Image (cartoon, rainbow, N blue to C red; front, side):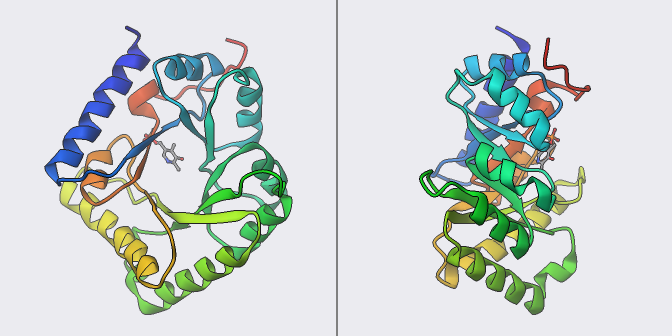
Length: 232
Ligand SMILES: *Cc1c(COP(=O)(O)O)cnc(C)c1O
């Protein structure tokens, strides 16, 4: 058994245990965050059963996608989005988790081939900011969600957040709780959303206990990141 497949197995066990602790029956999907990992290492994870991968850099991702074209992978874009990259992102991914403003959503919608399934979208919110609890930010979130829902070729799925790293589990849960409350707020306002993407290598257990439906895990699968070499 390889190190990668062993790590994946450990993580899946931890996911299951975390779900059981809070009596959850619904799915928690694992996105393997593969930025700075070679296509060869992604293939190793794929062969161990991992089918969802998250990438932060468009050009790097496209190279790996072509090297892995024979694999049935669901690609999620999770990095910061510059508006001049929206065309490529809309063409090469089935999910974009890092939408934080309307302009980006509009450009993605315009660039998405309408013969393809809609691009799945998460709004990325700032959860370490206490002000994100304020009514104004909640209203902004509802407005952005409303506008995204009205765009063609996009499907709003939920929220994504990257809380400030902390080893204090109570603080981890508090930060995730803020995001979950925003998620619930949108549902209560009638949005048909199912995705709460919170939790990374160091805090995914707390995230699952707070309701994560997607965890995005990189270093716990692949080890520490080193610069990518696609010809490996
Ligand atoms: C890098 C990254 C991750 C994974 O981080 P790890 O700590 O390596 O698990 C998750 N989400 C986003 C948005 C990232 O950029």
